[in-house]
Length: 164
Image (cartoon, rainbow, N blue to C red; front, side, top):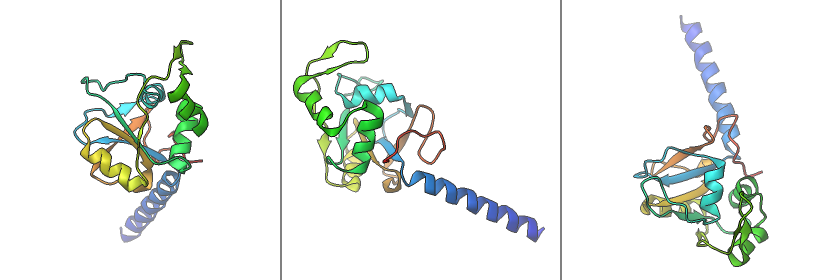
């Protein structure tokens, strides 16, 4: 009996270690704990990031909060979600960008609020009801809620949002 327990405990510890390693490069999408949203799609995230007037399901305004240019979590989000470099992202807010349907988004939307570190982004999201932020999964705590993206969460094999 003791041996079975030891084998089960070792197996569980190894499994958790693999999930932790997988999550090391993951970028978590976080929202305020009062936000009822539990999951979003990559398409919805793109609309939110590009400021196309996206609102939460309940009608609340979305405030995008990010780390500064050059941070791996920001670069990963822009590359994976928007298919853009930092330069392209900034030009979008100046000149506009072609939407998925082919129409031109003429510089609409509000540029994201920028905070120097992931913990500062997390704190802003925790205190702003309509906020959505993007931080390293290792920086998440219980002050915010992590939402699933395309049905997966940080640490799961199918999770798409990575820093690399």
